[in-house]
Amino acid sequence: MVSRIMLGDIVVDVARKDIKNLHLRVFPPAGNVRISAPRRMSLVTIRAFVTSKLDWIRRQQTNIREQVREAPIKFEDQEKHYVWGKRHLLMVSERNMPPSIELRDGHMLLRVRPGTDEDKRRAIVEHWYREQIKEAVAPLFD
Image (tube, rainbow, N blue to C red; front, side, top):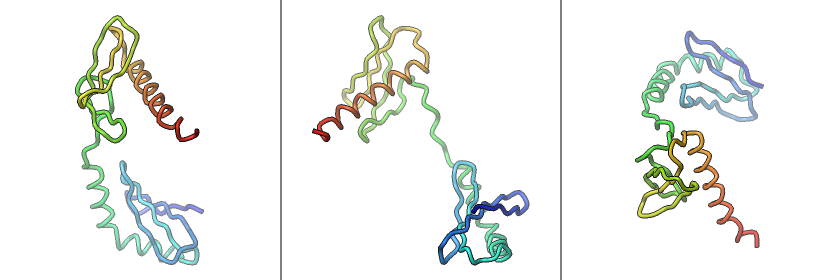
């Protein structure tokens, strides 16, 4: 059962659970506030607790909102891509050949046809990732 408490500009989602203590959390990226509370605790008590923590909640929301977020991937040169936990810099090469991907010396070489848009590049890379996973998992099932 989830209910809401409004405290000025702050909305707090209250989840009642079979627990002993209150748990107050502020979630990224927007700074949503959630409190888990024991089922037996009254809403007045929960509201008083949250009110006493308003300064802390506002500080946490400010910290979360000021964090530098990683820019969305555009599949352009010099972007960071991770393969098996290792970082590779993307290098895009446009040639009139079928698309392919090759890893070498910390680089991920993406070969595409000239004029290939971001969505098609994304699809090529995602397909390649899936193929890598299939190759790695296949021996585990044998």
